[in-house]
Image (cartoon, rainbow over all chains, first blue to last red; front, top):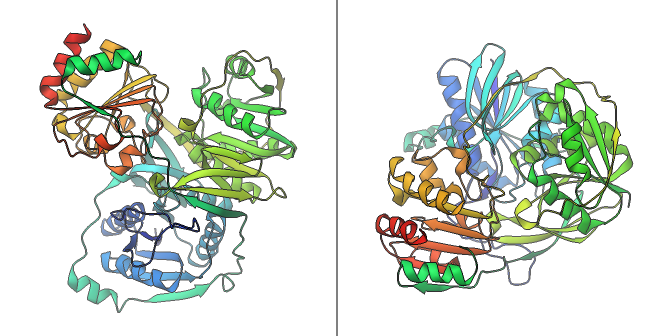
Length: 249
Length: 313
């Protein structure tokens, strides 16, 4: 295959304990470390491995968001992607509009495969890959833990509630990846330097003839309800008694 | 508003418990005019179960051999065919529904609301973001169809004393052939299903090996519990992936949850916070799991677990 397109989202780093603003208008993001969505990083690693095996010629990373998302695209380039595309907007982007912008990019680039994370760890929607596959009229293989390529077909193992499901999809297809697919590589300093010279193109929604539609309004953010701290028991006998008192054993 | 359509999840033979939980959410939106769609190869038995769910007006029985494989690529266009009479289309936030519903939403050209945990009104809902660290209220427009998934751990299954009617609907979509099911490897045995079990016992990295997990299985069998695991235990290869409890695994709400040798990372706690009673057994008194546990016991699990099993005798 000629090209693989990987979608990277800029999100609050997974090590940050996210807090809701006291006025309920959002979560605190000022001064907070931002990173590539971890699932997207795994997707990029998989694309790079496919290219390194000789099954693809070029890996393109794209992101949708503010100019600051260039940082995450540079991380992708440092990992080994060949070039980057940023669909720049300062507005919020719902998954349907993200999928439309990706589709417009696909129409220009004609990749043989699109790989992205199964969800982003900020909104936790788990929608964009499926929506893209629907709009594109192509297969989707979600929650993937293994991809085996054979000519124009990919055989994908999916992590589903019942266990492991294997499906075969004709390419081009959309694959969304789960945690256990691979361990992404560490980026080395020389790669970061090299990444600065790789091409990074910026386009807008209007360049792509896509409208950034908003169908939903988030009206309030609240911290989650906290569970009350319980009691500590001394030994197994006391534990069993406590469970009996609650009628649980 | 119009009517609500709930998409049934099943394994080809019987209805998954997630459907009865979606019904509970649907009932909170509007307690009249809720239909259930059963897309399967031969849906007679599944439709009988669906028709018995409290609150169901009508079951749409859509039989087609292609639905022997429950693939989003073939199910979604058929659901779009059914959608015209409905204002709301709901599915469960299981891997089945998470795979399928966004494909439906995109074909309809509308947004989706994922993981509804509470209904404020017919077009306003609460859902978790940031692994449950924030709960947002999301409003949708009544001008558009609403596609959503239901966080099943937030709802109790409706009872099975209903009397819906069953209506056969001819499969009328054009089905793509680009996606084919190869196989499903189920790793569950005779134990209660993790997602519906009233009691669940989970083990973490402290079990230290696949063999040691037999301690957990043995205790679970003693009290008729399902068995889960932390992500660390799954990543370490002690148990298969479908046993993972947490943000990226299964989100569950049993009456009793026993966490053994699990430190309690935030992504694990997200998966259990709706449990009735949480018991934590851990040798580290500072483990975060004790912050949410109703009953905590500090000590060596390799001594405590066998003793617990013996005393439950």
